[in-house]
Image (cartoon, rainbow, N blue to C red; front, side, top):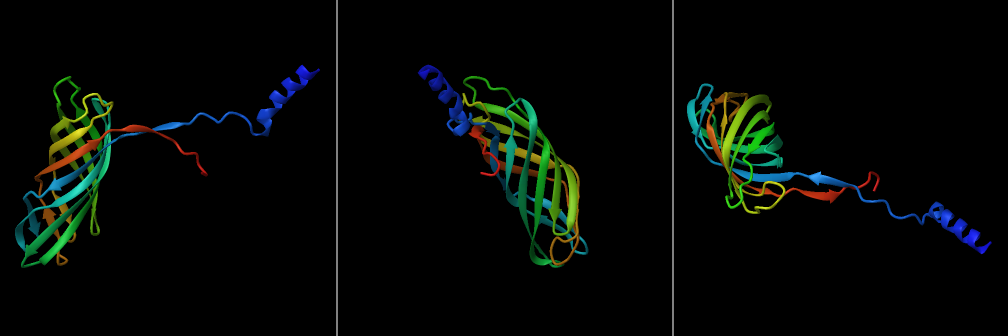
Length: 202
């Protein structure tokens, strides 16, 4: 009889909140690249103001995959100063959403340098102008953690926007066209990791 009561109590305990805690659910946080766009000369045609050489600078954030070929995307900001008789001294900005694919050369033991290449759709906003432009890049990744599961280390890239950007306001209310140009960026990729996924409502 006592044995039957003991078994019954064990059976009822979970109903009163004494069940074992559920196993945690994990989610993957991708490797992330943080980078700076170096000032590099670009040609700007200003409506009624001729041509001006400008040097955009900025910074960005990008999610990086851990496969040889994988999806990638990020956000980017650029600041461009203009000094022209038609515009006066002024500054305009580019805010970009980058979506595309990337290639990273496979890891080779003892060789920290890896080639990278990417192709993006650049969806951007400058003042009241919405624009879309294709962009390509190529560069090097210097791996700082050889046995990390994801790309990790310093990056150097050369990128190229393939078409003109026709903008409504490049300073002083003047429209202008930013011509295709090379750009350079340096950054660092932080390793991806697993983390516990929080339940909704907590």
